[in-house]
Length: 181
Image (cartoon, rainbow, N blue to C red; front, side, top):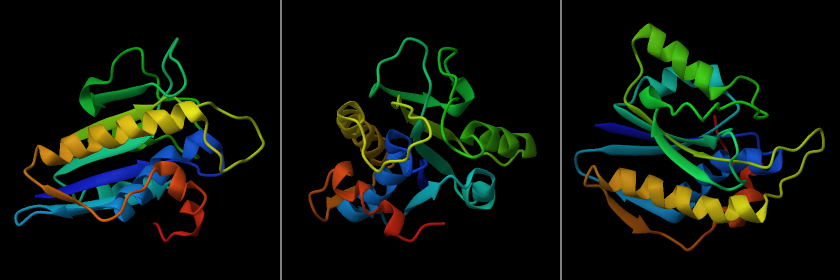
């Protein structure tokens, strides 16, 4: 079975880049070992629709991204199935060029969407000024995002080995330099 851990986000807008930063952190921090499963961690940036051929290659997908939630606090983390998005999550208001929600809906319409889970965090949405800095609330929430992703992968009896200690903040200033899609 092929499992995709996909980080989405615009690293130029602070908290909006947390999904991309998380993907790069997980790649550097962990080794995912399984005799029967392949686990890939991908920084999808803001590519959205260009990720369709990649997403459809997998049997299970977990996406790390920002979400909009009515009356939520910055840094709150939500974990849900794409087919059961809670009504209070709008998944709008991000700095992505095309929302990931619409991309997943397109794949679903084609009948090619694998089972997909979302780990979403509420960002501080900035205006026009760009920054690589993330708010303390999102940095704290990123720890919970990491735990949710690791727990999800472990459900498939994947051995997860620590390569080196890192936080999302350790990689945030370097994400734009790393190779991605």
